[in-house]
Every structure is written in structure tokens, then in C-alpha cells.
Image 1 (cartoon, rainbow, N blue to C red):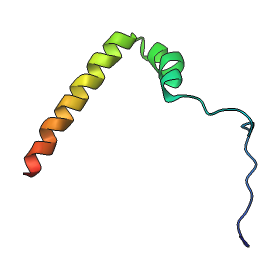
Image 2 (cartoon, rainbow, N blue to C red):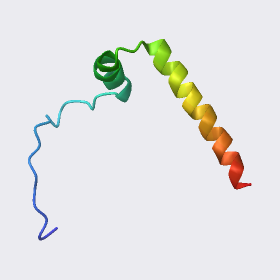
Image 3 (cartoon, rainbow, N blue to C red):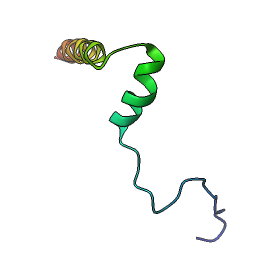
Length: 58
């Protein structure tokens, strides 16, 4: 791959990737002062609304 620059990252290549749920639980929800239950209700409403919008294309 001539011409491509190698970028050094800070992440340890031997470390497993962080699970997205862990990021939500440990960083996002506390910053929003939101419980997991409240977040689940919000996401359920968003998903339900998205399903309603997908029916409009018919």
C-alpha cells in the first residue's frame, strides 16, 4: 500500500473493544442523569416512531 500513511493510535491492540452498552451505562446515562429504564423507554418510542415512518413509503 504505497503512499498510505501509518497512524499510531493510543489504543492497545491487544485490548478488546469496549462494548457500546458499557459506554452508555458508564458515560452517557450518568451525564444525562438518566436511568437505564428511562433510556429504554425513550429508545422504544424512537424505534416505534421509526416503524411508523417506514410505512409512509408504501
